[in-house]
Image 1: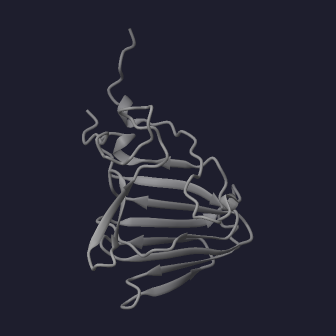
Image 2: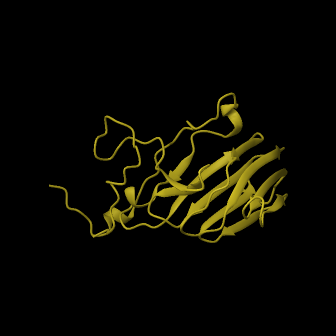
Image 3: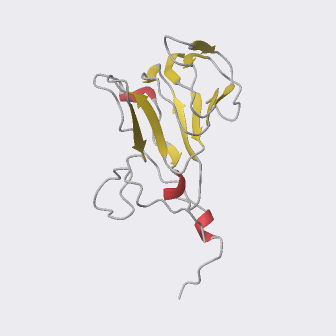
Length: 187
């Protein structure tokens, strides 16, 4: 009989994930695969953190539609030529604020961390020039990834995403972000 360790639920081994979200006509080779993601409380109970670890190798316009989150998000841009994370040769354009009111466009040309406070609109995010690989990490302080978008009728819609993973409750289907697998407590 296998004895369970007290803190076993706090340790998670990354599965390899492969990019499946590419807009019609876009080149899927913009990012190296496999990639690594930590999907929050569906993988470590009680977690309030989601993060992706990606290496961009070609220009790519990733998040085209401005959105916001109900919690803080942190975006990290580093050189992706390990071990020198400061070997950075790219131009990335990122917008913070609501387009048409208070938006500011930032041109990232060196290793950078950006904090997006809860409720602040951000994006588009455009990797315009990538002459050397770029390590990108988007960390959202929430149990499962979601974004809130403005709708054409003046409303808002929150969309949830938990990756191209099998459902934890029914491994024969893909995750549909129903949130039923979220474990609020690690004990």
